Length: 371
Image: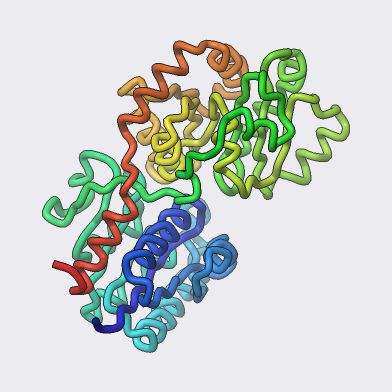
């Protein structure tokens, strides 16, 4: 069997990075001898997360266009040109048999070079509204793996393959009981538990919804909270909590590395509506309140959320209403066992547990390794 070399490119947020690592892990299980090289963007979180997962990564000096301040884009154009040159050298030195793009700035130059040199390419689009980079790369791609219906609006229909989104595989072990998960986090196993997460980088509106409702949180005798603030907001939040006093039923973390335990402990999850987060909630059948971020291209998080709401698989609270409504709604929901049961049953129907394996098989097919 001939050597197999695979480039995986993209990143910027956990929503791109976690699927990329999941695909790499699935490929390694199928072909332990394959060599995988990641290409990311310098200074972005993939430069830490990918090596931590055990893979080599090279960073490009790429940056996204500033749509609000167009005069700043001269530097961006230079970075794009430089990244294209560096990507060409990386691809020629590594000689991949196939390339995978997961979205994010870095996948543009890398996948463009690969396609131009005749390397088969596969795109993985996480969202219900396609990202700019993947839309630009679609014409030259061999296969486009998607997680939502109706993606022929953005991509050639004959290239689309419905796979679902890969998720972090360590979330799937089911040998942890809810009571034990709560105890391991120092929580009361008898209390209803709400997990509050804003994505890997945090979410200002969700954080402010907690900070501005500390009295309501403190007044709850039967409800407790796990709150991931995001590292970006952590210092300011801890300073404010020092001044106001942190309620005893509020566990505060800047980043939760053991999401498996946190999810297991939670009876209800408050989350942004990023595609990766939604895929995890589906797979774990977690009742959730989604607060779509307004700061994303084409408002795609609202579209992601409504795909679940329309199937009675989640509840949605608008970003501009969150500080007023979110906490009270969550507290009411988490004590309503029937509402939680219905949401859990409906969201589980949307799970695609084998997405990473399905995509890995398609990568191997494009590389000529399987029929």
